[in-house]
Length: 67
Image 1 (spheres, rainbow, N blue to C red):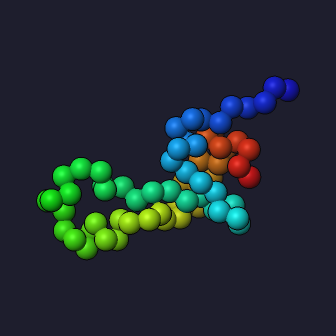
Image 2 (tube, rainbow, N blue to C red):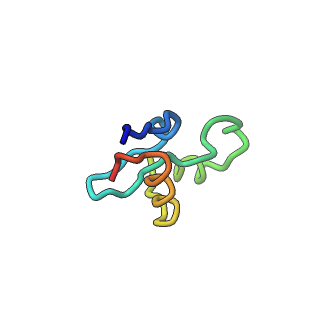
């Protein structure tokens, strides 16, 4: 059986923690930041952990060797 390829877009967007959870960047932080409240920009810093349903999809379809 040949090796499965990891989706290149997923490599750039997701990382796995040591316990196998999927970490992603927060959305809405790229442009038009003048119009967004300071609280929203502050809370969008860093990363967050995906919910279990989304993490299952990412690990199964996009990061096949990230289990």
